[in-house]
Amino acid sequence: MKDSKDFYEGIGLTLLDPQNETEGVREYQKLEEEFIKKTFEGVDSVLEVGCGEGRYLRHLAPLVSNITGIDFAEQLVNIAKESTADFDNVKLILGRAEHLTTLVQETFTYALLGWNTIGNIYQDVHKPVF
Image (cartoon, rainbow, N blue to C red; front, top):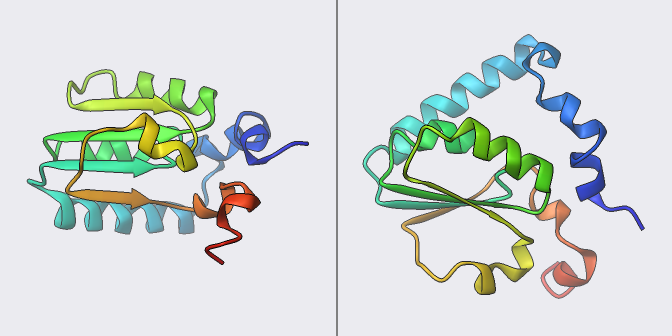
C-alpha cells in the first residue's frame, strides 16, 4: 500500500520547485517568514515535525539556538540536509512522527507541525485521537 511518503518522494518533489509556485503561494510564504521571525527570534530550541525539505528550518536556523527537524521521507530529509548545511544548529532525523519519543530525547521550547503533517500520520495512530 502506498502512503503519503511515496507521494513526497515522487511527484510531490515538483511542488517544491520555486518555478511551480504561484504568486499567491509566494505571498503566503512571505507572511509565514514574517510570522516566523516575529515569533521565534531568540528562542532556545524548536522541533519541527514533518520538516520536509527544510523550508521552515532555513528560516528558523538564523533565529534560534537549536532546531531539530524530523521527516519520514528520506529524499526530503536529504534535501533539507543540503539546504541547511551552512547552519551548525540544525539537526535532522529520518523517522515517523509516531515514533518521536524513541527518536528524540531532548526537550524543546516550541514544536511545529506545519502544512499537512497530521494527515500523513498512519490512520491507526490517529483513530483514538479523532
